[in-house]
Amino acid sequence: MAHSPQQRRGTRLPGLEALRGVAAVCILLLHTRAVFGGKPVFGKGYLAVEFFLMLSGFLMAYAQEARLARDDAPLRFMAKRYKRLWPTMALGGAIGLPRLFLRTTGLGQFASIAIANFLLIPVSFKRELFPLNIPAWTIFYELIANLLHALVLRHLRLWAIWLGIAALVPVMVWVGQSWGSFDVGARPESFLAGLPRILFAYLIGIALGRWWGGQPPVPVPALLAIPAMPVILATGWKLGLNVWWFDFGFTVIACPLMIAGGVRLARFHRLAGLIGQLSFPLFAVQMPILQGMQMLGFGYWTGGLTALAGGILAAVLASALARWQAAPGQEQTV
Image 1 (cartoon, rainbow, N blue to C red):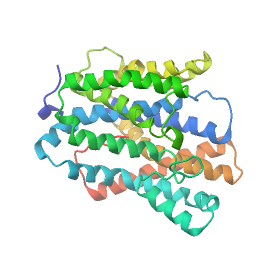
Image 2: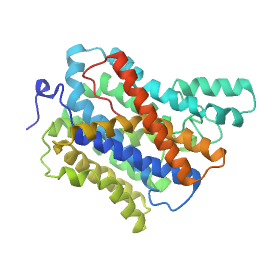
Image 3: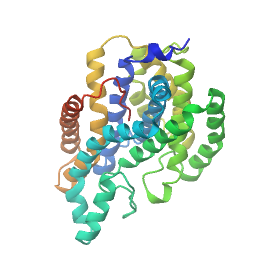
Image 4: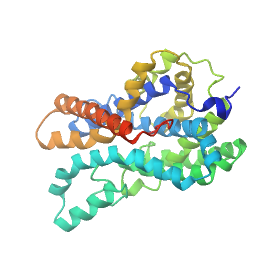
């Protein structure tokens, strides 16, 4: 039985916060290998994006739809979302400025790309849309998903959400067969395919948030769900499952089960909260740090550990900014 909107407000879900941190580390391992080379143990780490977006949809349905219904101010909500996400992404962009400057051909090109990317607007440049900070493409699409949620999706009944998910299934099969995986959206040639990718995971999250509430019917042990993502990704690599249907199964089976387990965690609130606070800052700054370290001639371990340290520092700064802004009661999603 789902919690009522009144019960949902103020609810903390420590397991989901811990899972966010695990997902961010999986993406760090993916990006570290992409920048420095090495064994692709976490070559499927891009699937953490599916988890992030499904979790975002879940939390929106679970904790935010009641607020939106009460306030009925979608644009104000989106302004708050942008205000929450932008400073940390801007920090990552600032770290990426020197590399972008060295790659552009003049001050005008540098400034135009930098300003657009700082505003989370994509610009095609050398097969990248966010050369300032490549992972920003996911935030761009998450904000679109949030806007659609605030304007349209929150008004739809659950059966209509499921119908939208069903309609996207053949689209995602086509995406998987066309590109060989769900790793689309970051580059100009696959940018449009990123929208159904994001919406597919996001809509599943909405459906689960409304259907389950805070009490998933699937009895997944919390302590099994938290390490599941790295175990599944590493096992997939070990078994050679570099196929698109692995991505599809991860999205429709593994992600919902991990969320179900995460919701059930009732202990380790402080530790889970600290891990959750690290997730978005680490996601936001890791790639510019890794690319900068690679340009300076550093290797895999030094670059990866520096990116982790940078994420921790960014998390401290983000926490201080959040306290200063004093915006209580709002769930942060990635």
